Image (cartoon, rainbow, N blue to C red; front, side, top):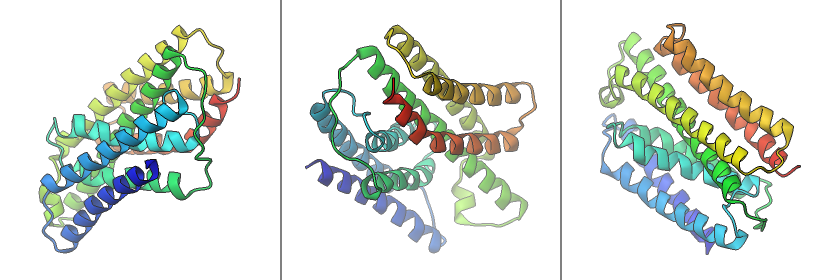
Length: 260
């Protein structure tokens, strides 16, 4: 049953991606309800999967890299549905769906242990883990907005007129969205660290250092932007580069999380 839910979510994201590619190829791309509905369906199916997985494991389903990748994909869609629709960044969904799709495919077909793992529960530790992943979802959406910013800037400089250019949010709105999403990610990470400390459980020192380094990296990016050393284009580049580092660090952090 849980595998069917994941496959259904992937198919919903494929529909969103297929619609986007077809519309771009036809030169008539317009952000509309179809992408939002497809993402809503995928989000609902993934939510059902995570609920069932959590019941099997007796805890928040973040006990393996397989779990983390699925939860991370879910968090991308969550942040988009909350932030992207609220700030009228509907096209953000067309760029978010491929990212969530790729992570889910890697989780399903990659050489990962998909066996549910039960573990002793601690409310603060589970809050810490879940908020960390949702924070990475916000940082991932900031990277997606950064890619959209860089793409629009390139199209404008090249004087290329296309339906994509006309339907991208104003470049100033994208720059503002990057900053908002970075702040959201930093705030959520800070709360997750506080929850981890309240658990009073021993933490792997390398894992703690790696997580703190990610927080420090994004805090540094925001400080650079605040004092004018990271104008919008540089901010977009830093945001994309920072999230690539986050993705590369996920397997290591998950491995260290399972070690005392």
